[in-house]
Length: 259
Length: 324
Image (cartoon, rainbow over all chains, first blue to last red; front, side, top):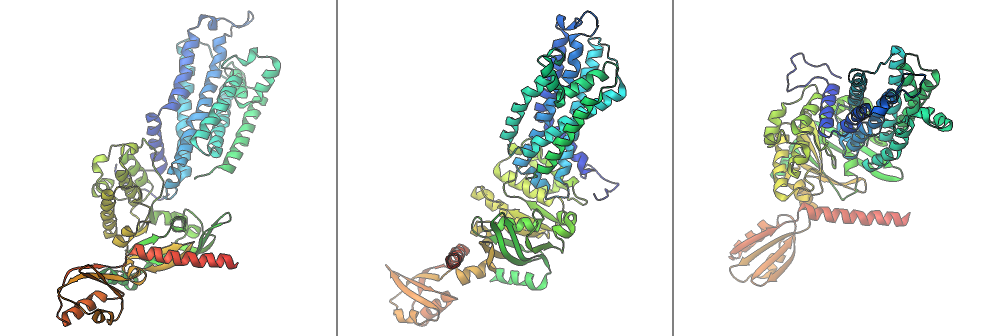
């Protein structure tokens, strides 16, 4: 991009990318579906689960791990499911459907920057969700989380890239907002199930556990679970998430249409 | 006549800023643009008219760099999407047909956003003032009326200080009053020194605004001239109507050069002819000592020319198809 003048004023905002982040961010605040479902809902569930007395009991006599403890990574992955299915793709599909992406592509500000801005905003939202969930469980409910920091960061990063590439894949292949909504609904319940929001994966039959561990969400919960109980996650869930990132990302890039 | 000279001046004294040469664009098996060539002079309002599906929008999309031609070329100040996409986008402001903004974006936000894309944007406040939507600065896009949305769309096309503005079907769907106001805006845009390419299917709009128009049919330019010249050449006969003060021998009128027919309608006489038939009829009447009152002249307009030219062309195209 061209160099900006040093005497830039309010009339002349600085970088197009940050201007796009600002505007897209305001639009998210004005239509806060992704905040409601991606951030507020998991927080609400955290508060709900935290106030159920039975959830505070150890899952078996030989451990201090409670049902509530098990749900913390599940809720973190729920944040990613909501953002990957709804927060990220729906506005992109809408902007394409109404011709906004096309409009942007007639200017020196490219629609790719708009896409990057959308990703940035959703990373901010997801991060806010993670921070509140983790801080809330520690500060409000006194959960003792033992982080394996590199494992935790890596697991969270891979979980995010896997679910974000799924979001961009939806944005790439959905021809309309209606179609994107349909894909979201079709994927929402299976993904929530395999993340363990209805029943924690640990108490599913072993066959279903295996299936779950090869879904991006099941792998994410598994990896987060290890890294939040003090150990570096095993390589299988990390590889599963990396594979999904590459797979979804490849199809998304291949089929993405700007108009 | 004045319009004519105006356009002629542009052609001779000003440099050509847009050059479209044997442009061709194919979608699948459909030939959207077959062979389109024209050049646009700096500072003119150039109209592109034609029936739906004639290839108007595709032509301007190639000029704006949204599409890459399959054949021929479209360059703006020598820039094309092939050799310099970035520079091209900086110099061309585009208003797209059927493109809208996110419903909840505010007018000022959209303008500041677009301003941030350019290195030398115009003052967005002044722009809103001059387009008459300064009062709507804080409104969201969905709160705007049709006319206000179009004004914002023009503002977005102009905020980057472009040398060329492409306006596609700008007034479609607007009420007559808003359309007329928009015409005034387009003239003011030109007065700022911006060359305007106007795609329209309203002939009155092209007639009123354009220095020259290109009529496109089946992906080819079938006429290119000033609206007045097209109307005069192809718009059919001029009809002069008047009430004579006394009896007139028809021969006096039929003998005049250019006169095609003379008809009596009640106490009125209707003379049909071509060229400067009005002056000839009036001076002939004067010579035989008859005064004409309630004189009405109806000349062929651009719409007549449009219909005639496209119908003739359609017949030719059909014949070619049959022969093949």
